[in-house]
Structures are given as C-alpha cells and as structure tokens.
Length: 317
Image 1: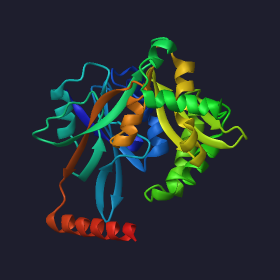
Image 2: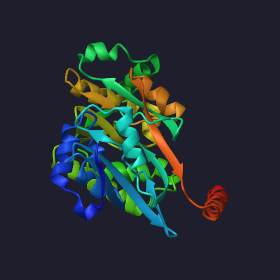
Image 3: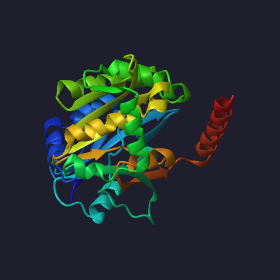
C-alpha cells in the first residue's frame, strides 16, 4: 500500500468524500465539509487513489505543530473502502509526518492499533439498534428511564421538532456551559454553522421539550449519516432535571425512528453517570481507541507540564 501525505490545498475533496461515503467504517465527522467547518487546519494521508484516507487535524502553538481532536468530532482516524487490517492501520500511523510533534486524537472503532507500539486509551461510546419495533426496544428500558418518562408525561412535558439550534445552544450555555471553560465563543459559532449545514442538507433534526407553561427546558440535535443517528449536542435546564424531560425527548426520538435500519449513537460517554443514563435505554457499550504520542524535546515537554499545572491552578480559582 502506497501512502502519500497531502496538504489541505491539494486534497481532491470529491474523491475524499466518495471514500468516506463508501467506506466500510465511514462517519459524518470525516467528510471534507465537516472537517472544514470544525477544524483549524487539516491535511491528509491518502492511500491508493483515495481508497483509504486519514485526516490529520492540527494546530500550531509556540512553534509546535500538533494533532488534536476537534470539538464535536468524536471519531476520526483511518477510513477505508476495503477491509481495514491492523497492518494497514499500522502503516498509516507510521506514515504520520515527523513535523507533527505531539498528538492527542481519537481513531474510530474499526481501527485496531498496536497497543504495545502506541499509547492507546480505549474510550467509551454507547449505541442502540433501532431496527426493531418501538414496543420491543422500550422493553429494554431501565426502571429509572421508565419512571422519568412517566414523570415527564404527568408534568405535561411536550415535544417539538420545530426548534431553532440557537435555542438549544443558548440553553446549554446558560446551564452546563457555565462550567465548561474550554468551549469559547468561536466554538459555539462553529457548532451553529455545522447544525445549520446539516439541517440544510437534510442530515439533522432538532428536538425540544417544553414544560406545561411552554418553557423550553431541554433540546437535542441528532445528525444522520451511514445509517446512524448521532446524539451530537444536547442541553437541559433546571425544569428538565426535575421532570425527566430529556428521557422523554430521547424516548420520543426512539419512537419516531424505530423500525428502521438505523443505530442511535449516543456519542459517549466516559462519564459514569452519563454512561448509566445511556445504558438505561438499552444501549450497548462500544469502544474506540484514543491515540497519544509525544515527540517533543525535553525542554518543551517541561514547558508544557508547567503550563498545564498553571492552568489547573487558574481553573480552580
């Protein structure tokens, strides 16, 4: 297999997108338009006339060029139209140019890197097959999810699919977002552009939950690709946490989507509470590898450790 490093301006994007569309492990995050929207910069490794590709999403800081995982792109890595062997994954990883001195990136579920050669952490995802009728899927709900759905119904929670993305983002920023310092204004603008692009291309739907007095209390964005519905972004307000609104919303999406050749991808989570919540719908655990490497010289490594330590002290204040 011949692998070539191709800078962004030389990438044949129609050929790239055809590979992602046809890949045995394709996903929406890897399309060129998605990467263009969500990444600072990206180059690529390409094999055999775009039969297999690997987006290299990177940033530059203090003279160091490094690979990073863009927000709202859970899994990237190597994508292939043909069966992807551990040997071909290794060839791609070995082909990462030396100029990328540091990496913290997520590969995808179908990538099986050598755990002896590479520093790998297995991250957690949850998926629910929606091919069965709703009645059968809902039998797999936990008692807690059933209780939340019943509570929401008794509290008069209603669901709409006529929700603006801005409303969901604003709700998030006013609640959970207050405690998330690494998401800035530019990141939210990127997310908004992404959602509208997906809506324009009929690849997304926004669900919202409203209280009995018509207060917007929970919202979620689902994006569609490769027979998956990805739970890309969600938000809850105080009323949602006391009424079971998010359980009610997800249940409504499952009702609307069941009986189709579709998988609900919850996009996580390594957080034990969220993982328990997703499993409550009957979702199964799926893992994907996160890759780390460090080629930095000693003095730069020491500098990075000091910066991280100072950042932790600052965030605790």
